[in-house]
Length: 105
Image (cartoon, rainbow, N blue to C red; front, side, top):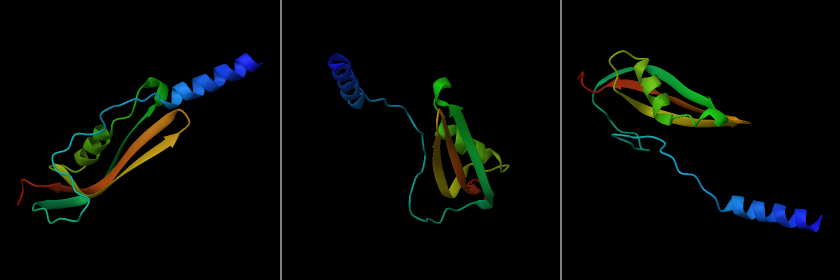
């Protein structure tokens, strides 16, 4: 029994020092402040990407792209919010923002 307890403690210690790194998102412009961006402002849109943890990791960029694609001609989001929701064995990124077409002035 004592050997089992030592093994469990060693596994917990080893697990606590392990780490995993992965790319979350690429961005062209990012700010946490309200800014005046020139362009044609569209409607408020939402996008999400979710996966079972055992089958992969959801991609925040995919969620952002899905939100932008919901407004024809849009190429960016302003006043956006990103949510990460975790459930047992399932994780979701949800993105909400106002779509904008920066090329149409």
